[in-house]
Picture 1: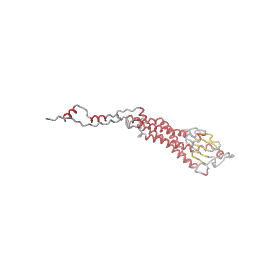
Picture 2: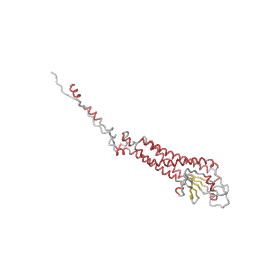
Picture 3: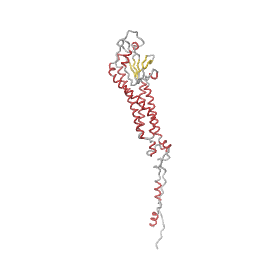
Picture 4: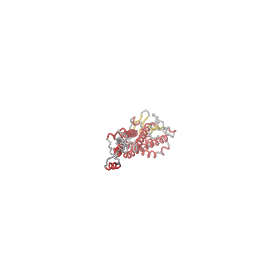
Length: 325
């Protein structure tokens, strides 16, 4: 009885248990090669987030362009985009030249009624007429109200500006230069990243440098926005501090809204790109089998793994033995 079993095993015939274990090992996970359609479908979530990031960067660039073109021309659209509007129409002068009062005190002194400050220059105009002239766009521009007002005063006319204004002129010049450079650099970086961000769908490794440059664009835009906000709030408070001079100033709502929309969308784009460094399967992940991506791309729960055949249970072997006589 036992001899026959040994003989059967010696001949190399596979037992049912061995056959069942062999069929369990016929999984195609290691040798599976997904098609292009499957890879694209599995990484569609990552692609959608990448395109949404590009859209946020596009919005940021549009609003940064609006910031850049503020006060670069006398048209109503560009002249109404400004950081600060200084109103001198009712300024109280120290001395007035021998002339008849025109429409406003400022015009009598040879000044314009208001001055609006932008990133590349300033605009000036009269009440009732609007903006009549804007300065030529200048790189690294900074607004010096003392110099402009003194150059336009008629002979014999003088006005007293707040003493604190002379103390912060150097600060205005330095900060304005930094603000100009940061706004321009942030706009250029965000524009380039619009076309580079979709390549993050290829691999998570490509997401790291893309996320880094997206962060730099968001950083430059946000820092420039914060600098502009603090600078012109201080500027406004300084000019209006001397109430006896009757000089009024107000912040440009449109300009500040454009700045902060650009900054917020840049930050959101960076956050999405940063999370993609560790989340959402890339095309390289799907091809190498590290991640499966969307389950809708596969017919089974795990890509490349076919259904396991049912294990065949081993049946007991019965044999007749001759009884010894």
